[in-house]
Every structure is written in structure tokens, then in C-alpha cells.
Image (cartoon, rainbow, N blue to C red; front, side, top):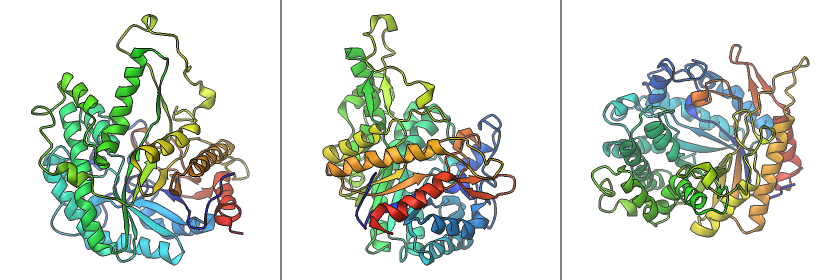
Length: 455
């Protein structure tokens, strides 16, 4: 069973659009996810985050549940259009007031706030002006960062600039299954660059406005392996790892963009205006602003099989495709060793000062039984095994400082709508009743009796 020092933080995580609701209340502007979810055919069950978990009105009760579980920390995100309805300019004080009340409630209950500034809900007015593919959005993000950190920076001492820029750029701008739903490779590359650039540009602003704080960024990292020893499968692995991991890690740690991926993208004619034309003087220096930590979101590994040659011409698989018995309800493989592998690799290769697991969790649809109890034993096993993998990484010298379970509560799961339940708290979306699942009770016991040596 994983153990850790008294400084290790155990928490849970959420994001604004997924739980807050109140999508058009108290002066909030429209976000790209408001627009996307209201577009017919975009969301699997046709639902939106208009109400979601109604956290905007029920945050005090939710903080009480966090205290009941015994969380050391809570990671949440700010809704940009709740603060700056027009993306820039006039500040909506009622939006800032909500987050001030939330932060104060957390601190009053002994829970450290970890604030993510951008978890994908870009103001729609900025999307209408070009969104993340437009360089002007970098300046807008810095302005937004300045407003938020001036208001909360005296009490919030842990800041995350962006959550998963790969998702915001690739899923939103290339694949089209996330807001804003675009499908353009050049736009995706520009968006990825501007997300990273805005991170680096925001770091000194946060430090100036929130003295003594720690600043980082969160990436979704996926350990990949070739399906066989063939040259074709190894190249498939190289491309996948470069696309999702190295393209973001390398520039954050002063290595610029990976040359092999630049060649790949040039060959596919993905580069707008020629090779890396979107990179301006000093961009790399800005992106690589020294940070205090890296957040890692881990859910699965990837087994890479080449699609460039016929299957019968490739070598037999060394690693079989995982079966349904080791998959969660969202069809993601359960592979705890992957968490150890990615944490150790990041530590050994990039040497971040500190690491947090900022998301890790599983989707299982276990519902309340006749006694009103949610017996989610599979989630308990999932967490136990992943905690143990994290402990192994720490024993190998990885400077892991905290672990945030995804998610605090069932919520709006992006394009899946309300069809997937990741929470350790059950939410009845019709009545907004909350029920602590068995996994929440297990986590509470774990924090109290095992983590940090507390009794």
C-alpha cells in the first residue's frame, strides 16, 4: 500500500464546465463549450452542461463533502467567460465573487485550492476572432490571468495555467470531437503553439500577483509501446509518442519542437506558411519559463500498430490488444504500470522540480442499490493499484508531491455527455442528490489511516 510523507497532498479534481452549471447566470458570457454542446449532434446523449452538477449554487455542500472525505487539496478550474464575458476588457465582478467565495470556503475547511486557469472553456467571442490558432489569444489569456491572480493570488498558492493543451488543440482543432469542433491540421498546430506560448507568458504574471505561489502546467501523457519488434510498429510508436508527449514536453523544457515530428508534419503539409512559421523570435524562451511543477494526467497506455503497411506484411504482435475485462466503461485499458512508466520517464528525461498526478480515475457506472449504496469495487481496485504504481515511482526517486483523483463527482464528460461516471461521489442529475460511493469512503479511510501517517 502506498505511503508518503506528511507533505504529500491527496485531493480530487473537477473542471468548471463539467460541474458548475449556471451557464448564463450572473453576467457569464458564452464559452466555446456552451456553443458546441448546444449544437445538435455534437454530444452523445444530446445533453449540455447548462446545469451539470449545479456546483455554482451548491459549492458549500460540495466543500463539506470534500471535508468529509478528508481531502488535503481540491483542483478546480476557472470559467474564463465568467470573469471576462467578452474575453478581454470589462471584468464581471459577480464571476470573481463566486471563486472568491469558493476559495474562502476551501481554506476555512483546511483544503488547499489548486486553480487551473484554462480547462477548455474559451470565451466564444474570442473564438469568433480566431480562437487559439490566432496569436492575439495569447495576449487575451495573459490579461485574463492577470485579473484572476490579482483577485485570488493572496490566498491561492498553487496555479496551473492549462489543462491538457493536446486535447484543446488536437481534439478541438484537428479531430473535431471537442469544442470548437474544427478539423484543420494547420490550425491545430498553431493552437498548440499558442497554448504553450500563453502558458509561458502567464508564468511571470502569476508570480508577480501571487507571491510565494507555485506554478505549473498539466499535460495528458500516454506511455506508448510498439505492438511488435517490427520497424513499421516502432515508427508508429515514434510518431504517436512524439505527437502526444514530446511535442509538448520538449519545448516546455527548453528542447524546442522534436525535429522528427517537424519532418513528419512537413511531409504531410501540416505546417502553416512553411516550417514552424508560427514560431516567432523568443517564443521558445517564453514557453520554457521555469516552473515549479508539472501536472500529469494519466488514464491509459497506447499499443502502437502500423497502419502504413498491410497487417499480413507486419510482424506478429508481441503485445495483444487488451480485452474488455481490463477496460473501464469508456473503453480505456486499465494499466497501472503505465503510470509508473510515464512518471519515471518524465523525471529521468526532463527533471521537473516536482510532479503531481493531477488526474487519474476510472469510469464505472455502478448505481445506488436498494440500500442507497454505490458499491464501486472496481474503482477501489483501480485506485489502489494506481496508488501503488505511484509509490513505486517515488521509491525510484520521482519527486511526486500529490495525487488528485478524477473526479470528485460524476459530471458532464465532454462529448460523452452524462453517459460516463468518473466520480467518487454519485450525482443524481435530476434531483442533484449526492451520494458518497464506496470508493469515496475507501479514499477517506486511506487518507486518514495510511497517507501521511495520520490517524
